[in-house]
Every structure is written in structure tokens, then in C-alpha cells.
Length: 616
Image (cartoon, rainbow, N blue to C red; front, side, top):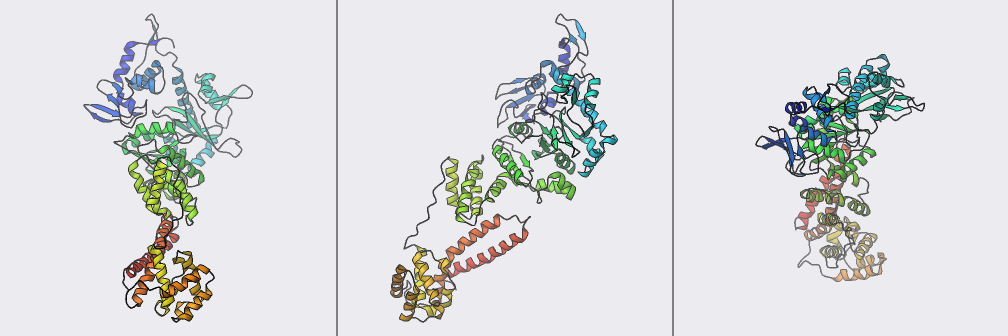
């Protein structure tokens, strides 16, 4: 640097710079009264906005961390620039021509060599222009054909600055050197790299190129897709880590989407460059994508500031991962990061598992908009995906599934949502709500899940008493119980001795074929192979029924309905659970079959309840 920037020029930059415009590129600001604005501080984590901006004075201050200053200091602290680099960036936007002077006050010129960051930004801007021009050449036809095959015309390519890296070892390098950039600048910026021979060659060769912009709109890197099977490199290749390009902080499309993200309170996370283009062109202008890395904490910090993600105002984060196994793993990772958002998090997966670009090509723009509109709460998706790993038709499978999903519900940051998701989880599992609630509560306290011992049913429980009464009727009054009893098999009995007696009655020919008396009791006893059950048959043959007075068909129906009711209720619960696990959009036939079974079973249960209450 030939000297320092003149004080009056710095003052001119401050005067012509809108501090709101500078800060709004990074932080969503909302009116705070008295002409002030407020937002989430970019310099520390917070849930309640304490970052204040006073446009009339050109100053900002955070009451949370104590940082403050003007537009120059904001850029200096946020982007780790030198004072001169911040002034130079703002001067370029404000149209202020800077003059420099030596320490003794002498004029040192108007166009000194700029700081390293500004030089690298200028090199990237020129590289982007070079790549765009190359896309118009005959050699770039494969790149144009790829864009066309993905549904993007020339206007779309121009809008997103798409370009072509020539099939040459050093076309870009030579061009930038002619423009005055040094070899060190090109390697530091990741635009070129040393060859084995020691010469400098291009980073990208024979590839379709997308410029990657930071949130302010400056080009800081590139993403490049190979166009030939002869290319031994990865399908997508990005700029390496540089002082400009930090992949853990970069979101492709953020410069174009930031205004709409702040306006709509929603951001849509997609997986690639073409998905961002497809979403924007289809009417979802809030889409952004990570660049060569997973969605992480630094990306969250950027989006929280744009979304004004606070306790008072919570936006939406919509992930559009593929429906395959890798997409599910990404969704699980996103769910683990979800606790850092106040915003509600959703996932949108198309029925065929297509990404937004494929969906737009196959079904049009409206389908992309419908995909986002039909988003599902991320916690619902994660619970459903977790449950799909287990056999929920078995007791062991349901226990394992509950062990895996209870911590998910317990970990919800919004405690008010836990009861609702506890009930929903119980329904999907076909488990008692109180049981699931105990598991969730223990998981929330970091305790081991409760032991699930088999419930002990006492001999005088209502269920055992009803079983005993039904067997007495079949033994003592087969003329009344007859076909009604024979229609109730051993699956409705719980006591092992009662089950053995029920089997013996069937083996003896069934109650409908018998006549009351000692011969019928002897036939049942002879058919019974269980000694304890055989002794119980004699007791049941002489024990009075619980009804006073004459027995009739009504009493038989009431008793057998009471016997059948518990198992039928369990079947209804289990069928509802299975129905919740079927997606009608992708498996409508199965859904309708189960739905029909449920209607029939619920009708049957209503009839049993009426009969058990004494009706006919």
C-alpha cells in the first residue's frame, strides 16, 4: 500500500454509505421504535435481538456483547478485513474515489495497489466474466447441452452466471496474468494450481462452471461439473478453502435469496446448484444450497440472522433431501442441528424421491411449489423414518422402536410440543399413552428406559372373571351358549388354564353339539391334557353363574361380548397404528385396505360394547 487513505475521503465514504444497506446484507433488521432498527447480533449467539442500528447517526451497537461502531467497523469485524479494505469496498459501492497520502501528508496517488482480499475479489470477478464468455464458444456445446437437458435456457444460464472452463491446461491462468494478477494471487485464490512441472495451470478444465457469491454478491469461488467420462475427477469440484471461500459458511444462491428469505420468513435448503436454479425459476425464491459440505452450524448462524430467528418471530427452515438412505441420514443430521433454531423445521420429499430440478423437468414449476407447500415437520419425518426400521407388529419390535424414538420426543426444544408428539408416537406404536409418556419423561431426564415386565393379571380381575363365566356357561348350559361360545376361540382368553379348557371344549366337539349333563363334562375332561385344567373343569361344572335367576341368551351374549371386547380394542389400536405408518400418497391401495378393515373392526367393537352393556 502506497499510503493511508485521506481522512476527508474516509469521511465521504461514511457520509455516502447507508449503514442499513450494509448491515441488511447480513442481518434482517426490523423497526424498533424511535427510528431505530434491531436484529440478531452476528457476533454472538442470541435468541432475543439485542443488535441495534441507528440510521440517522450511522452507528450500530449490540447490548448483548457490547460491540459497536459504524459501517466500516461492521465490515472490519464481520469479514475480518483491514480498515483500508473495508473503506475500499464501501468506496467502490458509494462511488467515492479514494486518495492516499504518505505519513508526512504528501499526496501518494489515486490508484494504489489494493489489499489482498480486494485483489482476490477482482480476480474472481474477472474469472467469472471469462467463464461466461467461454460458454458462447463452440467448444462449450456439451455444457450448453447439459443445461438444456436440465431445463435451463440461455436466459437462465445468464441469470446465474453459468460459464465454461475450456479444455485447456492454462487458458484462465494466462488470461488473468495478462490482466495483471500475480501467480501468488491466483494460487492463493484457488483459481490456479501448480503443475508437476512447476508451471501454473487452471483449477478447472472442461467443466460447466457456476460462480459462487457471498451474501454481499461478490464472487468468492466456483463450483464445476465434469462434462466428459474421460475426466477422472469427481462429478462436482469446488474451489478449495481460501481466505475468501469457507465452505462451512457458504450457501449458494444466498445473494439472490436473502431478500425473499427475510421477507417470507422461510428458507428452503436444497442439495445442488441446479436445484437452486430450478426452485428460483419455479417460484420458490428462498432456496439455497451448501457447497461441497454438509449443512452445519456456520450455515445456521447465517440463516438465523436473515430469518430474524428469535423467540418473538420464528420462521421456517425447509429441507428438501432425497428420499433415499443418504437423504434420510442427512435429515437425521439436520434434526440434530435443529435444536439451534427457534424456527420450525420441515422436510419436503417428493413422492418419487426426485430432487427439485428433476421434479421441475418431469412435472413443471407448479410441482416444485407444491413440494415446498406440502412440507412435513422434520420431527414427524424423523420419527416415521426411525419407526420404519422396526417390526411394529411384534412386541419386541415395538419396544425397540420406543427405545429409539422416546429420546427424539424428549429432545424437542419446545417443551409444549412434547405431549402432542407423545400421543402421536403412542398411536403409531399401538401403545398406551401413559406408557410412552413414562419413557419420554425418563429420556428427558437422561435415565434408562423403564423395565417392561409382563403385566400380572390377578385371578379375580374382570378379564379372568369373564373368562371363567363364559366357560361355566359352555359347560353347564351348552344349549344356550352353543354356537355363540364356539365362535370365540382361545385367542380371547388370557389365563393358561382357561385356554386349556377352551381347547378341550373344542376337542370334545364344541358346545353347539353337546347336551348339558355329566356326559358332556366327562367328554371335556377326557379331552383335556392339562391336569390343573382338568381339575378346574369339575369346579366350573358346579359353580353357580354370577347371574341370579334364570339364564337366557341375553346373558350369554353379554358375557361373550365382554370376553371379546379387550382383544378387539387392542386390534383396533394396532390397526390404527399400522394405518398411521402408511403414506396414502405412495401406497393408496394398502391404505384403503387397512382403512376398510378399521371401519369394520370399529363397527364390531361398538356392537360388543352395546352387548356388554346388556343390549342385544
